[in-house]
Every structure is written in C-alpha cells, then in structure tokens.
Length: 303
Image (cartoon, rainbow, N blue to C red; front, side, top):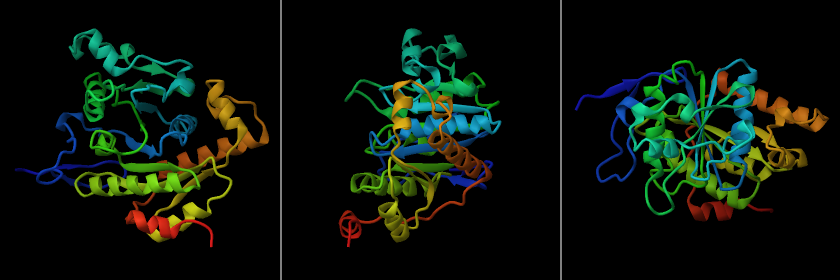
C-alpha cells in the first residue's frame, strides 16, 4: 500500500498508516483532511471548563486577526453558546433534515457566525449507546470541505467532550496539529489528563498530532500539575484561577472578552491572547510519557 504524506504549518511530512492490526480505532477519511489551517483539539476531564477555554481561545485568535472555526464535539451541543448566545442546530440535525443527502445543505444550515466573527459548528452526536462520535466528527469535517468552508480558515478549534474512552472520542486527534489539555490542580483532573496524554501519544505514532501542553483552569495554584509535568515531560501553557467572573460569563452566555473590563477580567483576556499568540507562533511538540495509574497515586499529594 502506498503511503500518503501530509504537510501543515506546524509539522513536516507525516507518513499516514493504520492504527495497527486488530485496531478498533476510528480512521481518517482520506478526503476529509484539514490541510489549510492550524488545528487544535482541546481535551480534559468532564466539567473542567473545556468549552469556556475553547470559546475564549477562539476569540483570542480572532482578536489576533485570524479566521477561526470552532467545532463542538459533544452531543450536548453547548460548546459555542457563549459565542452565538444560543444552542445552534447540529450537523447531525441538518443531515437528518435532508435524509443525509449532504449536497442539499447550505453552509448556513450548519454554520453560525458568533462573537468576533468566529464561525461556529456543533457536530452533535447519536443518542447515548446508539452510535460512534467519531463518525459524526468525520462527517462534519467532510461537510465543511465539500462546502469549501475550510479554505478561508486560519485556525480550527475542536472542543471535545469529557474523557477519552473510545476511538470515536479521539477522532479529532486525527485532524489536529496539537492536542491541548485543560486540567485543574487536583487529582481527578490530572488522572484524566494522564489518560489523554496516553491517547494523544498513541495517535501520534500514526498521525500528525502532537502534544502541545496543559492549560490550568479553576486553580489558585499549579503545584500538583507542575509535579505531574516534571515527571512526564508535559508543559504548562497557561493558568486561569477560579474567578467568579468566569462563572458569571457562562451564565451571561458571553465570552470573557464581552464582560466588564475589571482588572481580573483584563488579566484573563491578556492570558488568552498570550496563549493564542504562542500557539499561533508554534509550540514545540512534547514527547511526554504517561504514568501508570499507581504511579499517579504515589506522585500526587502533599509531603
């Protein structure tokens, strides 16, 4: 079988291979490659603030003059509501409305422009226990390409649901340049981060995705995250404390860039802009080694 190579703004040619004999992982559709944008997939423990992080990061990229597309990859389809002020129709909803004849869809059927010009898409998903989220992600990217919506895009941000538990949830990694992890300074978040590190490193063997680092969220301190980073080779990309303004922004259905310009809000905005600038400039890939579960138990905590 001939090997296919891919290039991007961040990495050089990457040989594309299968995920190994006996694999049950989701594979990338060859015609659904994202080749014209920098692509980031945001992961983390459920409820840790991935959507808040993704949406504000998307706005920060837009504020830097980039053309941004955010793709929510959760059946709850609430990734982009602070950008659009509503729950927008999902790709699955749109496809079902035309009996899955994608040629009958128009871009406005599944893409909504949000705050700062961020283009918003919610992939949606099958009902619980009835299908694979990886299929939905693949169909979403294919649909975007069929309508030439990726050609004028500089940055794509995938906001991925909860913990990685199957190949379907890892499907955005097949398209991403960098995998980013959101974690709090606590055991459960770091335990989930370790699983995600393992998932990204597994995909990195055969695809172009590489680890970018961790964004600390809802945490006054980062000592436990830094302890994990030192043991595994991970990197802290940014830090957001547990601020009431962040909680209130979700209740107001707004990004942090739309909140009153208090000193703490300005500090958060500047941190998002700094992270976006760093990611756009290019962060070196990490070769982090995940820990065994027991090793995390032994590593974390107070002396």
